[in-house]
Image 1 (cartoon, helix red, strand yellow):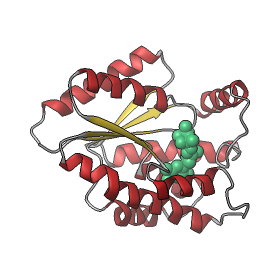
Image 2 (image 1 turned 90 degrees about the vertical axis):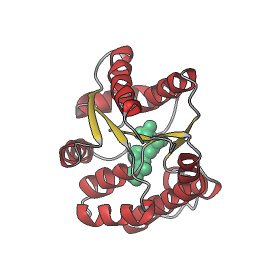
Image 3 (image 1 turned 180 degrees about the vertical axis):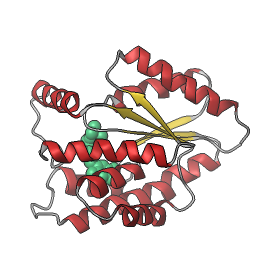
Image 4 (image 1 turned 30 degrees about the vertical axis):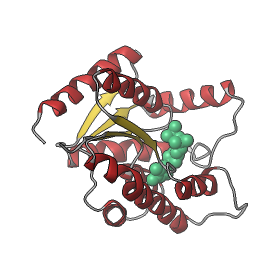
Length: 215
Ligand code: TYD
């Protein structure tokens, strides 16, 4: 039986990484084969693309068009080298960000044509579309507060997206909510401003329902 493909999306500080870890542990405890991946990255090529996009590897300003295509290139690579082979082998895949991040950040956030972002995503992923996408939703002020606290705690500098103005983050958040309405069969909106356990419980309920469905 084909594995299931679950993605996590949301604004900065929404708690995705924690929930990805918790879901992975729970699926493994149920005896399922499961792998996780993060975007951009997850393959040798993808990790270099990650360094270009997030760690200023080339020391060259990345133009917005290039940014879209680099995200798409990293995604095309991980889909064909890791995600699709795993799914075909019956392994579940949990991804921390996937194609909807491009629609939200480059489309709604940066202002590129949203339908064009969706087309580029479709080219990159082919038929490998998530079965379930959790949108961990958070209002912009909470998101920015959490992001700043996280960076201060780690003594970390902000990456290119974190440096964006408040309006950018507001557009990303609203874009995600529009997408969740557009594809309700796949999206589940989970309020992220709650205790970790409560968020995890909502996620597990939706995953249990997915498990119940025939492949
Ligand atoms: P990451 O370190 O994964 O941060 P987070 O914990 O917020 O997921 O950084 C990913 C950043 O890249 C994040 O700010 C969102 C952005 N991004 C895009 O703009 N477009 C994309 O297609 C993807 C995958 C990420």
